[in-house]
Image (cartoon, rainbow over all chains, first blue to last red; front, side, top):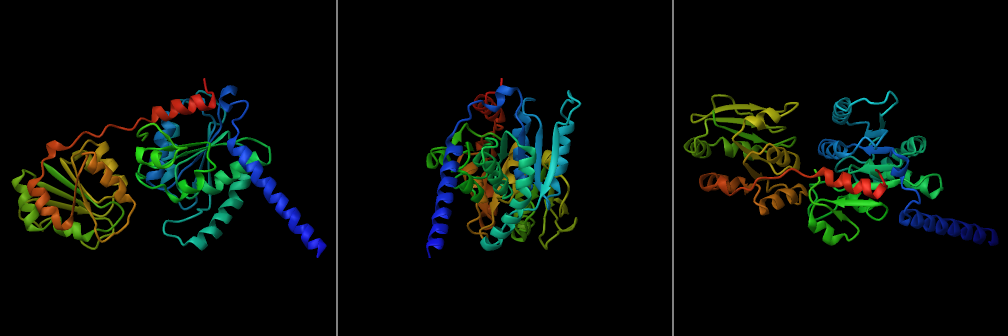
Length: 216
Length: 164
């Protein structure tokens, strides 16, 4: 009995410390901003169709300081890779070293997939995301809504929680969202460092959101 | 030739294809000076053939890798409410009439079309009001749709992350 109580107590303490650490990571500005070193390693999450179009427009606007760029797309996605390669090959190749990579992970949620099977497939996606993000160690994760964002952001947060690296979570809600956030947006709103919305009605509902007008 | 391009994206919307090729509608389109009707019918069952219509020349296809060329050649775009199609047409600077599929309820994509209609970037109707809308529409009330400013995002991020 005492053993069980002790076990529960330890479990409770661990969970508490974990949450405290999560709170600290999410609310801490890093002492040394990543840009101060001259370059920012970005992990970019692609999605199907419209999501990729939007994120590529954002990528086009970023300067050469955002290097290297690690693209992660869902394994069922055929469209995105072509768009990414087209975009990257249009960039001037000033360095001979690696500037971009493309990785694939299992899709965490198909459109209209049920809630319970989404949980299982998200866990599967997480098991692929963790080693990938721990290996790439990006300075920031940039995403805009496909379900694949969630496990990748969780992996980024975990790097911070374990004290290995503070990964900035940058979320840009899709232009399609005028009145309500997407499911991914609602999940990532509390844990993102910068959360952009593209319509003023969303900024009014979500005070933490950054609204700079239409971005894409 | 003055062209109307109808697009349903990756969905199916037979009711729209049927309405837009009805003699009632094609007569109005002809009276308005349009001579050519190009239909992208997606997964729909209805693929009208070239001589299905007395008033206009008709071309129909299901999908293409890119419909950018059809958009570019169009003088009027009639589209389903899908965000991708709306943004593509507006981005190409074309007058746009969005036809809402009222059999698809609670589709979040409607949010964007509705907002763009409120901001006078597009016209908005359902299949049952299509004839009326085409008859009475005034395309000169439409406001141009300025492109988004991704540079604002980049500037904000540069500052936030300390990028020089």
